[in-house]
Length: 367
Image (cartoon, rainbow, N blue to C red):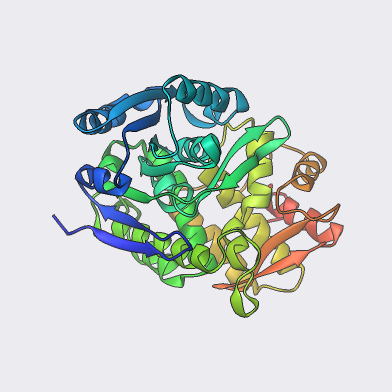
């Protein structure tokens, strides 16, 4: 078994992302000294992963089990309030800690609960999906959804550590693995073209749990995110004119609108893949991106089994949903686009005709 890789995230409160197998023994050290109680937040359908974590912690800590609904259903004010109430009844203090075990929705919710309880307690993420490993668990963004959109309520709260145990991916449904690859490919387009080359040069069935190719993709995607958030943790803009953390939202403005319009029937990585095609077509139509680079989005995403078209909502419906996206400014839309691969920029106030043309390609009507 290969030794775990330790990827530092050099923010103001630095921490490590550990990528490897059989990592639970690192959990007590990650929690640090002085912790008496640990709340384990995990979806009710992932107890097979949460139980070993609780058993390990129970040898040294008082453990509070906080089961939550699966997926996006957990990311509500009602679920967060239930967690707060139970932390209060258990007497959780600022020196106690939270451990999340689950996918991206769980780390979003659990991180938000940790960020807001007593204005911030320690949290360690143990992600169980590829999507959570390369995206949601890293970077300190936390949040819940409202009736008006996804992640509209949240806080920045960096974890004390992230333990990415690749062994759990072997039990992940293929569709969930594909969803995670949507965020991996995104990192390739905005920052690390080697990710795209690995996908293009590897047989699709090589990108499976346990393969060296998938491990390298995970590590590269984590390194991309670690570097970006170290430079711009709170999304105010990076150094030397770089757009900063906002580049990690590539494909997300349309992607989040699609998720909402589909009532979250589409997985996050699937929606991001479609949203990235939209962003590429918007940049091409606006004269910013070479057609071959735009076409490369469809070929790479198709190669890992992700959708590149969707026609489940009208342009006007999606346009209205994008208008309330977190990245919008005033009444104008704002997109992360590319001028070439690994050269992201911000496009503010795109022409309506360009938006409609990109929508047509995204729906398959203009491809």
